[in-house]
Image (cartoon, rainbow, N blue to C red; front, top):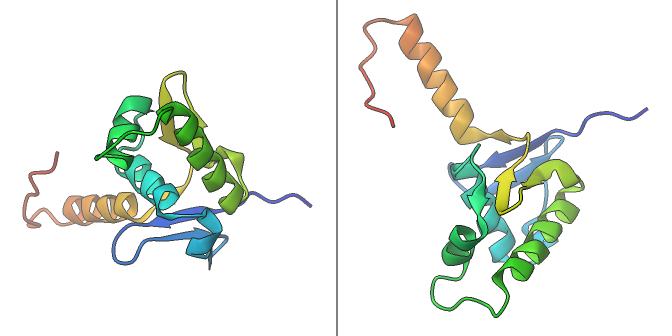
Length: 127
């Protein structure tokens, strides 16, 4: 039987990546840059984040000789750690986060439901 894997990113509090409810150890990602890449993609979701923007965020002081190749290595490490190639979507000029749960999106949805269900809920300026 082949089930669908559930992947969830926790950005509020301590950063965690969970697969089917179990935390994937940080060491499985092979370094902080991979986890930083996931955070950036989660915050910019559902947009495709261009290679140059990702490189600037990941290496603000000095870009590697081949940023696109280095990004590809980080993406492959993330996919391997999670065990699902669909974690990150590859576009022609960048990457986007795939179909995973993100606590910030869930929080925002709950806030919207609470606001909609209670007309006296204070207005949130939002983006």
